Length: 348
Ligand code: PHE
Image 1: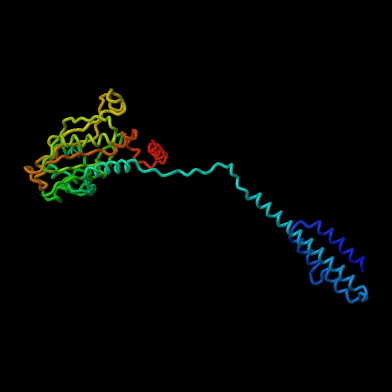
Image 2: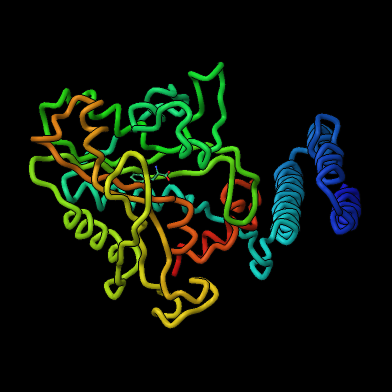
């Protein structure tokens, strides 16, 4: 009997040392501790053992059961640990791998310029308003002292949508007429209006069939050209720095009288002359003037009581100068590389 027990112990120890996975372990557990397992069968032999040997036999069988149970439990732990280590090794995160870079979005430079100018003019008491891009000939031309056949219409080669009455606005100035008509000749006006405008231009580095302007209109009882000059001066210094010098050059627009082109001193060469300012030392950034009394009258404001000035900035022009962009088409192309350039300019 004792020999039998020892034989079982011996084969068990051999088998345990050869366990390499859970399946083998479970098979061995059944082989020894299952219903017909080797250890279970041993206990069944108890009835054949003489009474005086029963105690000793019982102790020996128990020892074997403990040995098998403990060894298998230990082996199980060992296997689980090995398995865990293997998984940890496989799933290890390699912190030396370079991270995938996320590219940040950047505010659109035109949008940023608009916002900047809106904030500036709001700080001077102006309202920001909008007008329609599909406009009537009436507002785009007639109420601005550009009757049919007026030669100045030619300089704004216009997209007509329906006959000769409905068009894509060729400038933001129709919003002047709309605002005055709304004011009914009764109240002062301070407004700026940014927005898209359209002309039948061929697209090149400085022209686009669609571009943006920011219109300004101020109407009050005592307004002169020098108020326009002061306002333009503040705007120019805000946009291009405190040492920016401004000047007016005589010009012609049917809706302003007198009319001017507004120049800033070239910030690139400080007025000495360079490619940017075409060696003049000056850069033109808007058209402006004193509101023509005829326009005031047509739009319901008594020119004997009311006076005003108006201006129209080319928004892309301002943004191009401010951010050093040399082709207007880059604003309207969906080239993500260009956005990156905008992004960097943003940082400066
Ligand atoms: N509307 C003019 C243009 O598009 C600019 C302008 C606006 C001129 C206001 C005078 C006053 O060229």
